[in-house]
Image (cartoon, rainbow, N blue to C red; front, side):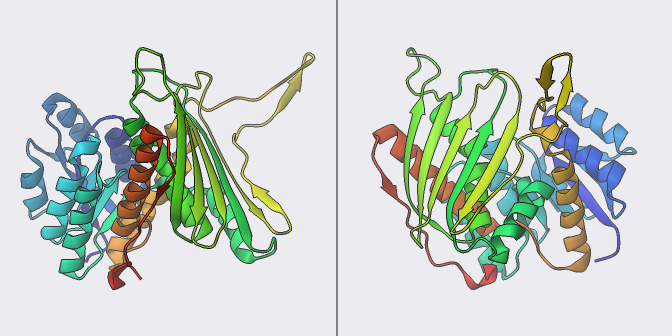
Length: 336
């Protein structure tokens, strides 16, 4: 691979636009050379911002284009697995926004395609793994200075109520970030979950404005995940790890605390794009550099698969109001 990576972008919504800007403006080793979206006017707009990238109306055509070295998938969730599998079959590295798939079977097919090819090509967009606050907390926990990690906790507050969201969507689109963090930061698998949720309204019992998931790890450690999808006031994420002799915790906000005129105030981020701006940049740099180096890094296709496996168990538990065991298969050697 040359020192320059030609990237094709599939999907130009909010996340696609952010990724395009990051790659084009901030990652010197990347050129955005191709854009695909069914909304051709939006695709042309993003392409113009990227120096006149080619515009495609079909994802398979973009993947097959000889000038495209790697693909970033920011299409709607239901298309992720199929496009990722096509990228793997074409032998091209891919950064796929989370979730890798919306169901376990589709995620498994991506993993099977990658294993069959004998090469890691998929990185999943769990950008918190590149967030300085999350990385620093994991380093403290991994150092062992607080003894064995006993409990993982996360609080995830989303501000907007743009639409009534079913439990399945809240878990696979929002809580799945916390599920990955729970696995990555503790360094072990989740074997049992129990989920409870509060509907957005009595008229929509399938909806979820607040979800709580209790976790049990293989070692006996515990976890607790909270996701408020209609917090209203702003966006916050906080994680903590309780060890045998201490607790490490991130700050939910990055802004300073201001005391003035008999008041104490702190600005709350508007959304995840503001909160994780640095993480998205770090993720883009790391992904492109991994392609240059020919060495896969970051959250893998296996991580995407196991996260949806746990997410599926959380949904089953919430809907049936019972604990659910998570059966994680043996990890293929490719992901060792």
